[in-house]
Image (cartoon, rainbow, N blue to C red; front, top):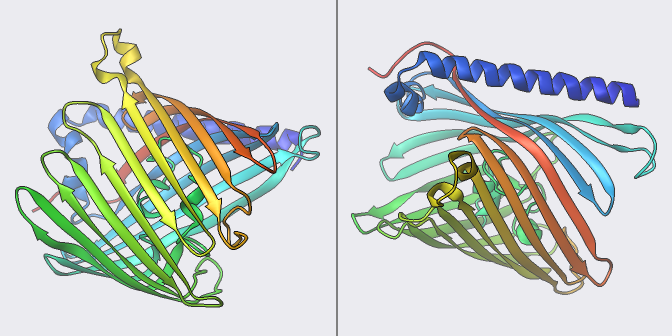
Length: 362
């Protein structure tokens, strides 16, 4: 793509983002506050819904700049009160300068189906899922990969453990809540994935499961994941994780340890929003983020795990214009025997939610 074409594409994306923001503001102005708060409850139960995000992320890694505009739609189509079809896709572009740091930008437009699954509510405590689903290993892959969710745009180094080869499974999954009371609840899932090389449905032959306990009063969750990789070399992978969002402080704390034949690592991330600081109102919309992580290869690493020990420290500063519109920025310093590198990110994310048909719950 020539530099002129790249500029035209970026302007087109930014224009589309502006139109989407204006549409969202107009819809928000027409709704009453009560309906706006419960928009998902009013529509998603019986009406097909399009959700997702638009984003523009600029990354600079060791002086090499890459541009990543993207649209991530999530489609929800209910069939009565027990069946739900859900899918997430990604349409975007990836552009870099021809010679790394000089020359015109070039790249490609791409499309990816992240998942496409059918959920069947068999019992209040059991959901059966069939199709292509995100592998529920640890916290990051299933819960935090969405561009509008994650506080830092770079994935943890150890997130490749337990998510080979595509981060998705093709097959079946059981999940639900084993027990629940006023003190705690126990969640579970178990899955089996077949091997697939079909375009947009790539997956490895794996089996595994996850269980976690959520304590209601402190809003603390702790869990463990296990996976058996069933092709080529059979590999066991384990993850342990913790998530805490205290009720009295706008803090989001997450930590995970990942272990496999090829390596072991951990990451700890804390995000604090300045809601309660004695500062002007506009400054309370800032969010401060930090992450510390390390990865240690075993048996030479490989299989998407780095071959040398790596340590990385990330710092992020995000600004929320609204809950669904924010500027994101971060800086990371990576240390390894191969090289030390600086990684910068800057961008904007916009979350949308649009019912596709008029209607309300009956």
